[in-house]
Image (cartoon, rainbow, N blue to C red; front, side):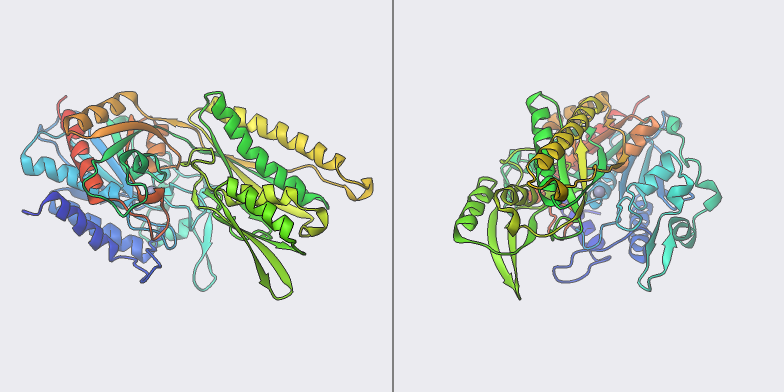
Length: 514
Ligand SMILES: [Zn+2]
């Protein structure tokens, strides 16, 4: 009971880190509805019960822990939410710091006897989309209810048997007939808070950490999230003998559409993260900037290689040619980053795919790999629907123009057949967070002696569902080394987590009264 806050934080990290640890450099795997997720929820339940919380579960097996405030019967409760599942071979901070901050903020108030509101800590299931290819399933179930299509999403278990979401929920002890309606009434909550690692480098750079393993003497700077840039995603298909040129021009057009939006003072990021078939190796995540691209080539000359190196260098990427049996591969290396959280521009992004596409456009046709059909996915995000639509329109127009250009630079009309680019989409609404709660967090940070800065979230979070359901919602970000997430290397300083605990506690205290 007398442990300092720093020690308590590190104990949580090590206890939670013992669940789903894969050993060596393999990180952590606590997938949605796995035994590991179950185990980490049990750990959370024990911690919360020790603090005096009453724990219950909804039909989806989300965990809710309730603690009455200092003034019985006072105003509606404040919810602190997070998730504890991970991607495959993920890290031990994404989601986990949200839990630590929620629990320890309440613990700080209890230890000091300061006033507190009625509190509900929510730990949502299945936030990560690894298993069911859709994110925030637990919070979606709790705040909005799930439709039949979502319940039928499935994954393949180790013995290649398909398991649907309904089956996974039922196996965990959930109640299927209740899943079509929300388990929570948004009107029954005053506010929703969530703390998360930033998944981009804004805070790290502001603090001055710059990827170092953490100088503990540098003062924390907390991020107060203004909105969640939800993705608008499309899939496009190029076909015909000129596919690779058309594709390369489209990738460059995607980057330029977002840069133009930024010049017009519109918030937007746009990325091509996934490409099929994998004639390029390394572009396989729809929400990640590709960090390494490999392209088969029929030959290479000194002069063309030097040109490629120059083009890549301008994008802070490197190039090498590897010989593999009879084939040669051009390998472009950049840095993998979150496509939603990393600003546009060469100073922020080292996008290996854009660099590779610029190189491809400089090479003679005979050198390029044969590829008659390429499917690629675009991920466009913004703080405002207006800006996102602007980039979307620009993409369509650019792709049409690029298609005409590629047709016209083909020598023989017969072999220049390029089919129209196809598209399918998936979109989440842009979510604005409550200005009055942002102000409360800023004020709490100031009172605790920490600097803070406003920033949008590039990644989606459970908080989106709370906000969409109509609860006043706020998010706090802490710096994450190199902006990394969803990897064993993700890491944040204890001092930044402790700062968030103190700020969250202070903000809760101000909500204690009626
Ligand atoms: Zn997360």
